[in-house]
Amino acid sequence: MCHAAQAGGKLDPIESERRTPEGWEMTIDRMIRVHGVRLQPNEGYALVKYLSDQYGLAPSEIEPYRYTLEK
Image 1 (tube, helix red, strand yellow):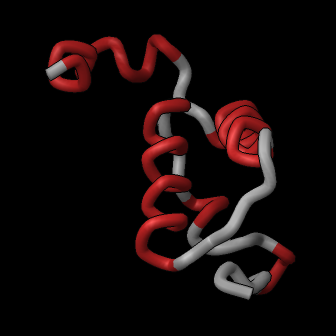
Image 2 (cartoon, rainbow, N blue to C red):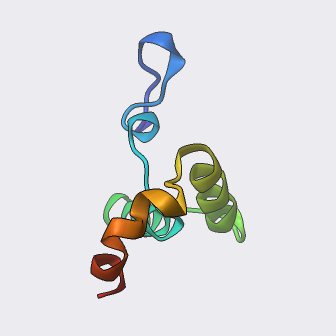
């Protein structure tokens, strides 16, 4: 309901974002805290894995920013 399909069937803004697995985990945590999303056990892990596999950043893409991410 929150991510209605756009023209071409894409889920905006999910399919326009690329993040690290940690970034996707923070996004899901925010959806739970702020928007009241409810997940079954292991659904959070499955979502992070799927989003990371489909829309994740490669290690080479985050290398220039690694120090910033580790702070």
